[in-house]
Length: 578
Image (cartoon, rainbow, N blue to C red; front, side):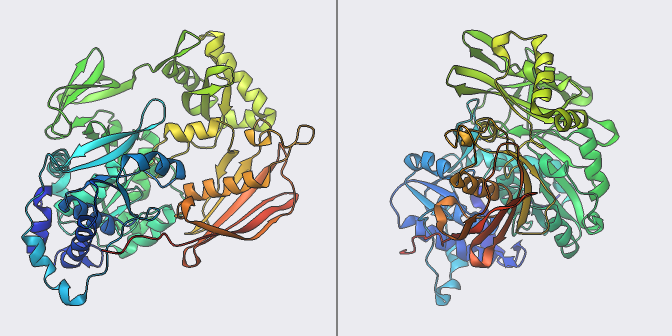
């Protein structure tokens, strides 16, 4: 097993080994130059709490440790959507990195760089209990909830990961990833654990399977892929995975259990059974498993204790904020060898006009139908009050019914399933049938994403195979009940141009590495050629031209081109007066 440096002493240890590679093409000495620069930038500013967003993991890590060594508490937004930043602004003293008007370090003169390793070596260790980072997790209402993590919690979890898996992963191993370090899984697996165990952080996050395939032949054998169920369950068989099978030593997945067929498919493509890590933002890592030989049981991570409280999993570990037991919402059963099996979620009970309704029960009933492959139930606030809604991915049989009979036929069939077991008031009022559940950079389906679907602003989206990096395409199903038709127009409804632009911006943010909307500068060559009406199926093509800071789009259908144009983004201006 490779050595694992404690996070409080990490910077001082790196200063003692300046030639160690911390990322591809980046040595510890150069990394420390960035840490020192970020520390100076933060130290020169008032305020204790700073929001940080930085796409590249090495620069993010430098900013994180620079802020910590400047005595700052770091807050990590999960994305850069305007509503996210608006909610975050009152909670912090400033923005840093790739955020609007974010703090950036001033360049360090070359004559000073030679002294930086020595300077960092003299820094005192970070205080394990007063050094914190706050992440965000979606609560039951979908509103992001801030979750502070102390450095001692993170350090304990890094050590547990090293004890569990480090024997098979040597120092210098390169980490590849499809997930974001702005969330706890990516923060641990792509930044903190690699740094502590002398592995190489990922230089960039892969958004497409094609990028993994292209990169794999150029990485050293024994690389690690940190991914999610969303990526591993949709691996195109048309790609040549030979290089990936040769390069990868291990594949990690977190964010939800992998279905057995998806785990087997990932093994066939990548040559490794994914190591699934089970946990949450609140509890940290709890257990792990691989699905080879039909295994479904979870083995606790080193240092994690567990027990069953009234059918629910309770855990105790150093990953938690307090020393006591925490009872979760997962029902479990004990298995052989001190492991356990997940047997479902505890009921999520909501009240609809004083009637208790189980969202879990709605999901269970629909999953028992041959028409549904995946489903999420939630509540929405309508003019008539709180009601239930469903986002369901149709099975092959459901997709056939949808194609032949349309939405009314599929909704009627599924309502009939629910009507046998639920009171009328509990029946969903809103239904969405996407080809796949939406997911974020962590591969997780958030409550906010589901609400965006059911509130009727976005059309039904079916993503098409990517034609290459920087490109994305999707088919949009324009249903008559979309909210964008309200007022446009009652006798002959059409999609207004502003709604089409909103679709383009929203979908681009989901599929491409475009800047946040706050960086929007202007629209060029905007044309609306033909109207979009209810019932249309429209293809949207997106191309992100990073060198020009421009998003090129067009919307077309069988009748021709509906809209086209270019969205130009400006540079995100950061403070540099440090």
